[in-house]
Length: 607
Ligand code: G6P
Image (cartoon, rainbow, N blue to C red):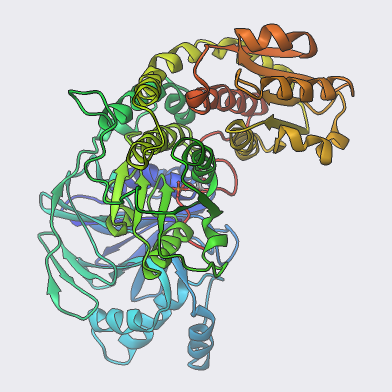
């Protein structure tokens, strides 16, 4: 949820840490800070708000040192003030922390009895004070850190440095990710290998429970039993330029425009190179043997799962139980022996989804995951993983990760349908061919951007927006509303079009635009009838359909976007683009921070 970075070497570390933090800003941007060690002890600079504030501060007041740690924060305990910004420090130790210390209040009370004074409202500061307390009682920094770690409850990762030692970073991982970079005359830590891309491509990942000691030339890793272990060092394929915005004003816009390409990559990876058929050699779940599939995820990934429920049930005749991960975990669902668990996550780190996966495994469900970040925790823990090929997604609002999830789910559905004998060979061939049409159709749909931008000028002043759709367009309506809320802060709701008359219709007037997602499918007539109901009450509709649908519905619509014609099976993938572009252009007109919307973070590793 927060991003941590650290470096120990021979060069000045401040610029490296700032660059690393810049790459981690998607994990939180409430405040940022850096601490280094010099002969004079611990020194630090911290600033409230975006990283630029810290950069400006350090331009006037540089921070020397060849060892340091940095942090970008998404506030949990304590408001987003400079005082609560990391690194937290005493005169002996400085700490950066990602995650939550669940028993911090208990530890804080205990330390308060020893006259320890706290400077912040954070849970992190108990780590600083506890280590300091143990050092004051004669322990070495490493002993004090180990002893402190043993007392902490929760899911977290840590970077720790000590006054008087310019060649030691202690790092620990319990529940949230931590990558270690092996450089030339330097060692690094980071919440995400992406932060280290300009520094090194030699990366290893700490396993859960690991404690590591890093010096400029060496790393020692100990597992949770205290045994010395080796973690494999791999060459990361993340390159430094993957992070640039290129010709685009925002990462989100760049990522929207990357979709034809990354969808091509994702789909190609799911097809047999010779036969062109769906091909999932790594899939260990036998779809013919399961009676039900449970799908859990959070946010946009959940809506991808919701689209997939329609597909799995209609095409593979496989009943799907779908739930938000934070609900499913605590719902005490009866365990069925012939069930399997599918989790969907861009980051592979979202805590609720990860815990749902762990619970499913505990219940004996075979599990598989659709993940975008290859080295993530879920990818390691699921029985099988299918990777989307979206590449790094930096914009907090998910776009290309969502559509690559949909493509993967569509391919999985066809795979399951084949194994379950619920699809004819002709139909399988036809649907596979439609899936392959996606990149070209997306490229065509992106040409509608100018028109969508114009429509955005009419809609951006609205206070509320309603999105409607039927079938797979219902989850797409929810996703459309989520995109708009996230980045433009306009209140929006996604509804099943047929359900509108049971409540939302009361909201309809000329000030509440209605976005109707209506690709010509078996339900088009019914959806267009819902549009008439809106128009009859003075509501203004933006109709998104193809030429056939637009011809039939245009006269009742205030605006229309004429999409390329496509088979209804792949319509969710294609119709994602106008809703993304609409949200984007509305947000730009409103002047919001599109890539880093307020209060949100990209990877949510807290409950
Ligand atoms: C956050 C992000 C969303 C994302 C959700 C799930 O809320 O802002 O964009 O959909 O987490 O993230 P995941 O990495 O599990 O897909």
